[in-house]
Image (cartoon, rainbow, N blue to C red):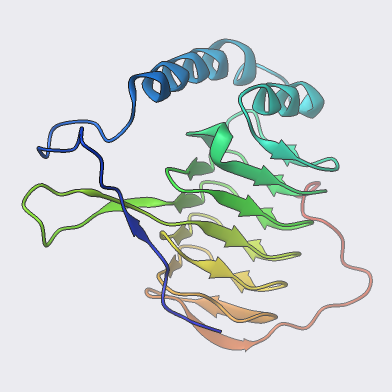
Length: 201
């Protein structure tokens, strides 16, 4: 596995200065419409109304399969850059800053106040051009409270990321990782009786 994150520098005609937007006018309109929808129709819903929230995400381009759970207070920046698989759990106060595509594989859990950050800047260039990278959370992985996952990172299947960890590189499958920067600590032991984290969130 390549542990280095994969990112792409955004190069558009609009981005001639550090203060101009890299997004098209239509993208900015979609962002505005989505933010209004989130505020008025998504955020006020009760926890059991996950089907309605999934419908709104689909309406704005999210690719959803099965029955994922997205908390009412979870923030998704660009639904059209999001893939959710069956029994994913996106916990309260979590944020998906998906300037690049973010994929959450089946039965993974993203706990409270986790930040999935798929965008940054090239600080070697005075214009600070936008740099984006895809993020993928593997099947049955668990991202602990207030962890930060940076652009271009792949979290391996069944991996556990500890609370408050900062993940700057890919993590191997089936390992417990923690720290800043996050590093593998030991192999994860899984009992057959363990279930999805949706109920706990």
